[in-house]
Length: 170
View (cartoon, one colour):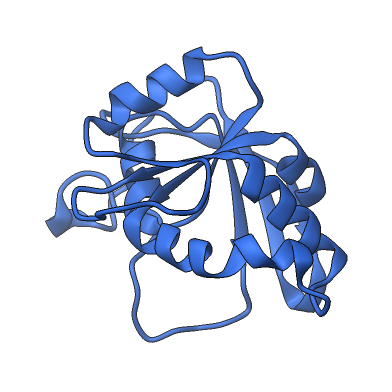
């Protein structure tokens, strides 16, 4: 499943932090003799893809085919979605993922679950509604609620699980 996702993309979205991490690693993996087949394939595809970085602070984006967008996320993603081409994939980062979900711009979710617990970090999903009543269930159709249905859950290597969700119709 993951190979199909990677093969169907031609645009990657990033926030500044994730872009800097990826730009420091992925460009050279295609020619790295110790890289595995997936890493080489992904590096080749990522190097060719358009890379759109949403940042107000990043000064330059030197990974070829990269550009910085300082304007409205919703307008730019809507513009990208209206263009012909392949899939648009979020490279990572919880803040950008949260913004895409809050603005109802995500059609599918591919979430990789790692069997690791860290003591800090940013959650991918925010609680919707009143922060003083986090245990309440947000009703169908409530503002800010976006439902997805599980299409597939597949174990991959080293205990990782890839979850594939699509927008649920209400």
